[in-house]
Image 1: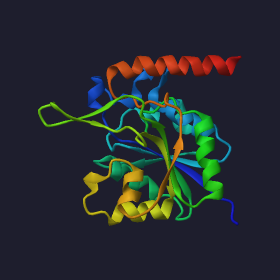
Image 2: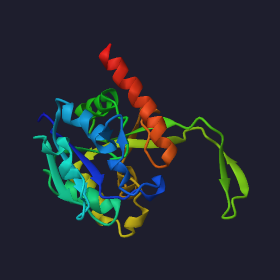
Image 3: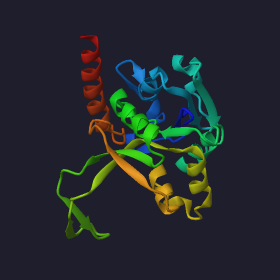
Image 4: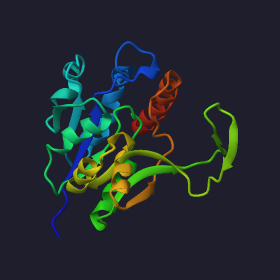
Length: 232
């Protein structure tokens, strides 16, 4: 069996308006580094990751000034209007049989242990996989007026996380054959809609995505704990 080649794709062409900053949220600083630097570092440091491709906006004014931008594993491509366009732009730079991990630029708390789980899965299973954690809270479904209509059974409900791992050729095929691409909310959804299988691998719940301004404080708390443990 041929040893799999692992690559990473980071779509980073978005502007993240909900955070309320005047720069894209991936360039906001936490503990002296930008969010995207925190998100990239575990992959750049990982011995089994060969390439990391970042899709940035055509008019991006920030990435080239980051020290991390000169890393030998790193490649930059121009992203697109939507997340799926940015992902596809990067996937097309990779070999068809590469195993690709797609990760959100705004998830700075990803840990090596969760990356290792995905890689271990890929070495013995051809099925795609995604990190997720179990829904713990009571879930409500509302109407368009925010009136509660029902309580949703949370058994077998999961919060989707990234990275999500797939064969590159299979993922490109899934994305390019789906007509309503606005329905693609993550890579797993593309594989699902194309009839493929996706396995859930339980990941850490602190692998949060910075979306709202309050997420910055929580991400800083988690990262402070991670780094303090590494120094011990």
